[in-house]
Image (tube, rainbow over all chains, first blue to last red; front, side, top):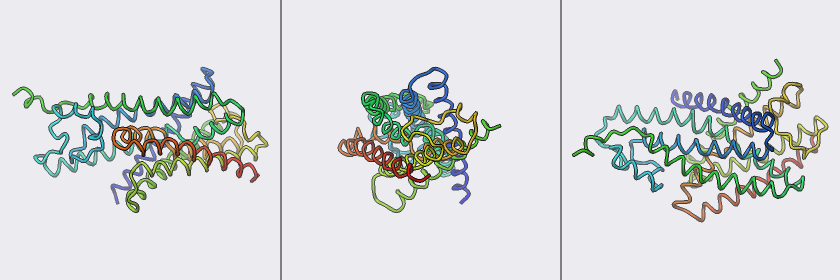
Length: 179
Length: 145
């Protein structure tokens, strides 16, 4: 119960700041710089996707020690094989206390940064509402650029982000590599 | 002061939206056997319906054009009225914070490596249904005020 309250607190703090940061970015891009709304929202969504790739790659590589990470599906997580001793199958030698400690760190950090901040920073609903408005205003080309561009660039940058994220994981296997 | 009130609405709404999204994901993994990405798929469609509904209702309330591209930005909160504060709370905050693009992209990259058909389904159906939901919500919301 205490864990749930802590997780929900982290999500609400992250979510509040995420939404505020989105508002700030939109304001900067659209009102101050003068980019069209669909470009501004596209930048927010693509930037958020890039950051979630980095954060997810780093947190899963650094904190998940039970061998259950989704990151294993991604080929470039193989970078971690000779880099982190508990990758990819978990580390039976780690004490139960350390397992618990890393689980709590992973849960807290991902609640704050992934579910909270980046989840709320990016948005799908405003993106779809904007598509409806662009179609209604006969700006079909803008609508297509917005949809195709956001989704394809989102996929590309999350892939690049995961690449960078796993490379940020601190090395713990240097002794065994030397031998 | 009115600017601060607008920003507070965005923060409160974003926090509530993110918590609702987390609870939806948890409910999905606990009570169904569907793959993990389907929770965000459903969240994005439901959130898009409600953004249309609340945006349409608020635009009609302020006697504004339903299709006016008015993404609530900070400058709107300068002239505070209930319509602008409502936009901050419901549109930017709750619906914007509830739905997510980053987790959608993250789910898609895993599907791209393992389950191509589900990737195609997720992308095409998310865009199609969420856009239709936003349109439907907008049409219904516009008749409220």
